[in-house]
Length: 483
Image (cartoon, rainbow, N blue to C red):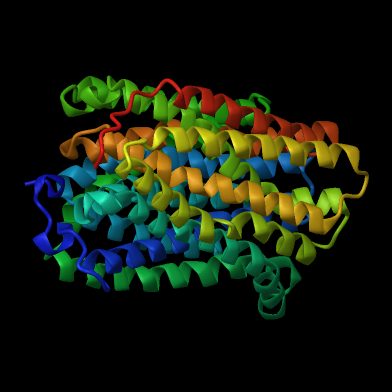
């Protein structure tokens, strides 16, 4: 029986009696999973910035280094995007607990191996493989929380767990300069960039093992063999496809943003083939109007997330002409706001639903405020030759506070509009479509910087996309009866 159809323990679904509950432990473990997963993927941005600044042979000698660096981030998300939908489906079949453990262990191995590679192509392959493994985490995390948390606290649970995203972003961003300095002492200046991948990869492996112990304790044996073999088979095909598109397009002289768009086309061709073979549950999810609106609106969210997560250090360093270390410290204001924003957004949406207001009005309001604040940030960069680090810190923090709060609102709303048996597939489709933004954003933004010599245009585009997503949210139909 697929794990999603089995009823969780009564203890996990009862109205809370006060004090620490089993579902709180689940939230904490999943928070750790988000932390390590996001640290592993975020570290690429600061490392790429360091490689460009130090004219390293891997990137510094390229004619358009920011475009190439952004493309590396985009290729990671091409892999990440491609396993969103298969990951949700595998979770429905083999169990969400199993897929979460497989994802963490996979990410640890691939991140560790990334620090051992020599040469750009080998490094890119490892980043794509990291994305393929991490891509199965999201849909299974959201589904397991919905399955084992009291319905009245589902939004809060999703917000608390995904707070690990902000912690991972913060840890990776602020630790990168120090880990690279340590790498220089251990490996020498040329190979200093390896240390962040080695440290974070080893830490992720250790946490993945602890997660496996916990998941077996709460639900029995994991179906790890079958699920891992199935994911390996899928990932081998997808990695070959991603790299083939990259090498052919790059050989033809296509710009980095064009390669990223081709990777998105590849994703939908492959997912279309899955729909053609499995038209039952998957087809029902793809025809759900609310799921589609949420999914396409989330393109802007993922665009914003990975524009600032990948390039925030470079944005601050270029605008304020500051050092790598100072820029990394300022960039943490963008990453760290989620520590408050994620749980607050989940809690507020739960209360709004309980009072009969629904989650949608808050989601729209927070998205509009965040989009406007990003446009204000762009205007500030445009009108000040040397922006203040303090002003940039405040703008990044406040806009990120609203941005992080709106995400669990959208996740909880998606959970409300699908049947329990379709959660894994629905969250997989949701993040698959949303990841279009993550795939295109780093490469296109880097290309814009190389062309204009400034990040201002890319920031304006980011804010405008968030306002478009708010318009899409207004079209969602939500039942607003009291919980």
